[in-house]
Length: 393
Image (cartoon, rainbow, N blue to C red; front, side, top):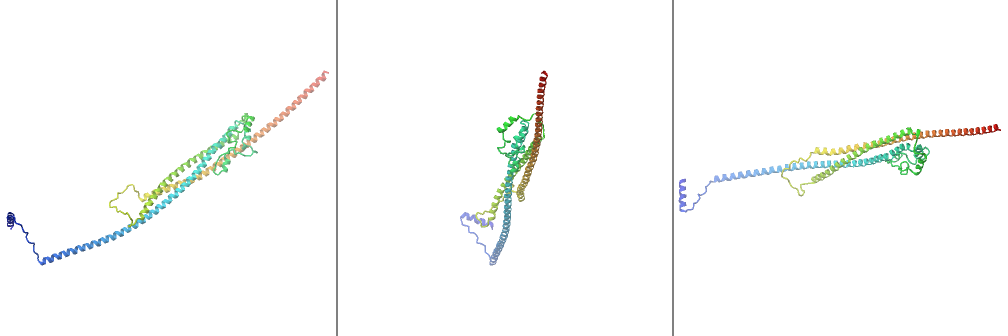
């Protein structure tokens, strides 16, 4: 059969004839009915599959919507909690910063008090004590009762010898002596120079003794120098504590600024809704940023700054109490040595006055005896002259 068709084709080609396709196949009515039923069944299957797919899609959409709402609710809750935490920590930073500023101002005030005390002790009290020691060995005891009114019991105390009076009066221990005080003036008045010129240039002979006055003056100088050492040490501690407070305040400022930025971002995120404009979906994967920190690390960092500020504040308060106690102790020590030295001066002046009075009395008696002996000698000479005259006659 194949051979015949091929032969016919070859003959048609040779004769340039058109090949007519064979007629389509013919089916029976039963085959047609079966084919329709098969198509109906396939269509029903596809419809059922589509309905199941739509139902599954609705179910997935509902589940996704429910999960999304739950996630949004949870995220909103966490955002509100985070905003509350940031606001609380921000208020704590502000409170600690305010306390740091107050403590820094208080320490600056105490630093000024220490500087005033150290400067006044150095420029007034120490110089005056050293001047007392030097003048007692170079001007004479008349200097003690004429120049320094402190040592004269009956003269008014118009000028304090040391800075203790100013320590008692001024609450900030400003130890400046008045410029009219002759004991603190660098150049003596003309009246004092006249006294020095009149009474000589100092104690001489046996009066140049190492008495109790000089000993107490040396002790007073040592007391002043010890007070200066303690006050200088307290001043260094105050400066260091002030530096630590400034450092803490700097870190609190930075943390406060960062928390303000984070709080603004979280509030904007909390305000976002499904109907918000300019929303976009990122379909890629965000890589993990190694610079991010965990919530525990963030809490630890915030708490560390607050704890550091509280620690420095707690360290500053005892330091102020220590400075108050130190100043009071210094004042008490200086006052005690001041009175001891004054008593020594008074006793020394009384001893000198008694010795002088006794010497003047002895001198008067000696002069009286000398005059009596002189009168006796004259009378004897007159008597002898009379006797010689009578004998001659």
